[in-house]
Amino acid sequence: MVTKKNIEDFLGPKKLAIAGVSRNPKKFGHAVFYGLKKSGYTVFPINPKSGEIDGEKCYASVADLPEDVMHLLIVTPKKDTDAVLRDAIKKGIRRVWVQQMSETTETEHIAAEYNVELISKKCIFMFADPVTGMHKFHRNIVGFFGRLPK
Image (cartoon, rainbow, N blue to C red; front, side, top):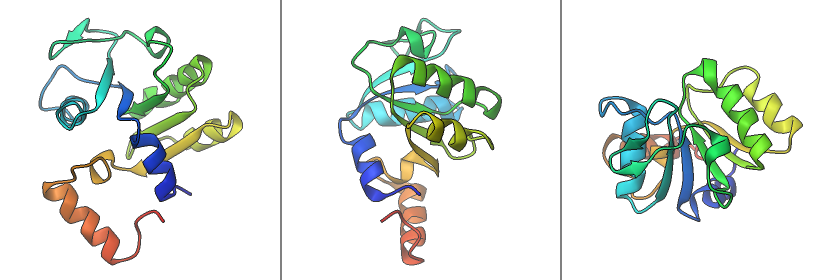
């Protein structure tokens, strides 16, 4: 079960890699990259088909990330999620957030097997401050029904 502390520990350093960043501004992978960057996060985009996105160096894979990047957000299509998770494990990354709708039936099993602190089935926009717009509304509704992580 994901706790409030898991989320705070993941977001606290404000430094993370994002696998699945898109060059297309209309895609979620671009929106999350841009949104977190705009909110003051140091982000390391991962996209094997792009050397740069919005002026930021883009990494081809998790293996290419700097050694001090220890948090990974996965926003890839489901078919790629578990391979990216395994790459993170090989790299030594132990805090991973798999954006809701990107997880597979195996994701949690893989994370548990390798002692990865996993956040899944949650939208990062509902927790990464500042939470605004529809994400703030959704967070308030979820909170009203007592379903926010404690």
